[in-house]
Length: 460
Image 1 (cartoon, rainbow, N blue to C red):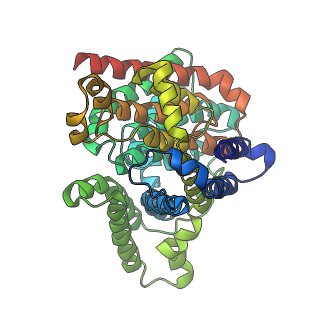
Image 2: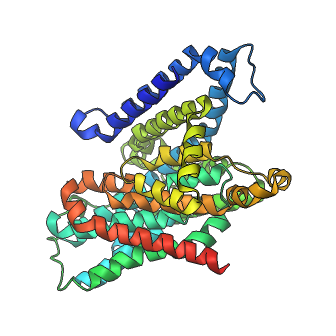
């Protein structure tokens, strides 16, 4: 059963990677993989559990240990899922009120190079405040209003993918993987911002500088009524748009402050922000007819939330948890340490691997493979192990570099990140076009950012 679990996980991964050719939603594959892995684990518990480190194990009843482990992992995973659900609802609420028009309507330039830098930096900072997936959707929608024709837009969309992933890496709420590390206490909000802002900025600057030498002229603008939204009058007033945008961004940015002050988990902070927005929008639209009020309410917006993505995260994180419980990830961690021997090549390899497979399970696996080291454990460790273990404490070098590498390495291929997959679906960008025109730029930026982080450590 131990080997069968690994086979089931690999098969599930292949189904997720080849979602489009198979025409099977990745959420369905992830959920099935999770259930089958846990089923194989509990059926083989008699043989697998006794081989695990015995501390805390009820070896007299291996099945009970498996069930208890499942409950423990589900509790940790639910914190991530509720945070994502709250954040996605807030962003959808802003979008339903056309709050993002406040930003998009202010871009007037038509010069390619100027627009390239504006789009890059706007995406970079917006992704840190929202998240890379949502920012990509917003920015691709913006580019459709600014540039006519798909082939003309594609290079700008490629920069959006790079910038969204780079911006999400240095913010605790900018990327699902960074949020996972933050919720798991591997990193702190202040630590990841201070440690990763410069490497993430370099990751964006390198592609922008290279492209600036080759881009010339002006972009063709679309016609006045080319975009569907421009032919319909807005359903909200300027005051309503500005208020909901300010409250929404404020609610997202307030989460790290809430966690620091109250010491409650981040999902409580995001639910607090959602509650405030819910009450505010109900009060704002209380006099409107139901047909106009419903699309602008949280109840109406919840129907637009990407529930399959939430179920995908549930499935893949549960599947990884099964491998962690059975001991697979401990074996992989030991092999990586014995083969590569240092956190720099380990993290760099994880980042490149995230371009091929989803970075969410990679980070989830790394969190299980390399447990968080407490100060007490570090103090009690043998002198020979202190240098290695010190990299796995809160805000340790391993966790910070993992947040950077897993967040930005996926830009190398368009299927390697949620931002890339969203852009691919919206703009119908082909895999081969992205490899030819964007992959090298993303790889150079990723490598330059990693070198910058290592250089910062050397100067400390």
